[in-house]
Amino acid sequence: MKFHIVTIFPEFFRGPFEHGVIQRACEAGRIEIHVHDLRTWTQDRHRTVDDRPFGGGEGMLLKAGPIFEAVEAIWPDRNPGRRVVLLSAQGRQYDQRLAREYSGLDELLLICGRYEGVDERVAEHLADDEISIGDYVLSGGELAAAVVVDSVARLIDGVLGNQTSVVDESFGELGLLDWPQYTRPAEFRGWKAPDVLLGGNHEEILKWRRNAAREKTARLRPDLLSD
Ligand code: SAM
Image (cartoon, rainbow, N blue to C red; front, side):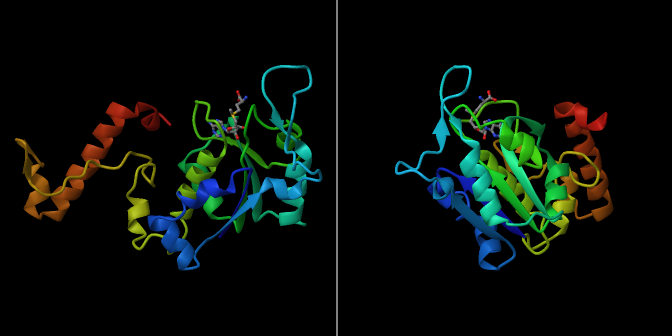
């Protein structure tokens, strides 16, 4: 799968994509990540990407023109396997269900806002989806884009070594949180790992894990059980 990111801070992504699973997936050719500098599609000497909002108010907005030109240059034609996503605090809440949907696409293009946001015509006439990663306001869409790339990439075949790790995770097929996990030592500062996990009875372990996952979900995320 191919990811495209349109941003005024392309260097931002050096950190997030040069570690662990994502770095290995790129090296193995399972995914491609192309980071595009929005200023490439400016026409003036100062490479201007922003302007003041009509009607007044604080701050600046990213202009529609360079963003439309960026998307049209990256994808001269659009098709159902390609999705344009605007990262925005006002967007629909991003979740694992949407991550799974995106992991079935051929290509995903993420537009990172900055300043006070983006000219609304990008949401109205260019983006397929307007997505928020949570009910809080970030300074820019770059962190949100990194979250989307990471969460989608790990669902793509061959990116994680062991596909069962995706199935058993939080928000997986059962719609629960992951079960609590423990590692050595079996007793740490007087707190013991559950005996059943040390016993080697796989049926009992599975039963304990399912119950523990349900109990933890009910305690921390009851909203998931009522869905
Ligand atoms: N004025 C906007 C508002 O109140 O909704 C906030 C703009 S924010 C400072 C700048 C950019 O950060 C946005 O255009 C968007 O791309 C990104 N951003 C901020 N919060 C976000 C969130 N929760 N999810 C995704 N992107 C976000």
